[in-house]
Length: 84
Image (spheres, rainbow, N blue to C red):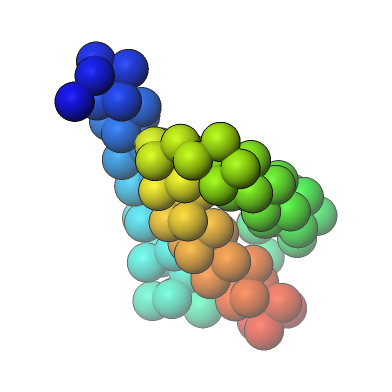
């Protein structure tokens, strides 16, 4: 595996895992008043575009990072709308 791929995968793991505590807290507390709906809508659309870009380039780190980030960000966005 090339060093660029390893760095990309590590970056993907770290940036994606940053969403886990927020998603867990929202699921546990059902409190979303301090989370920006507009920010998460923009962010989810951006993640969809990044995922599309990664798929077009067949770039595994970009694909993996954005699949998992999209899952966690979508959970937070869904709960933000649900508990509004």
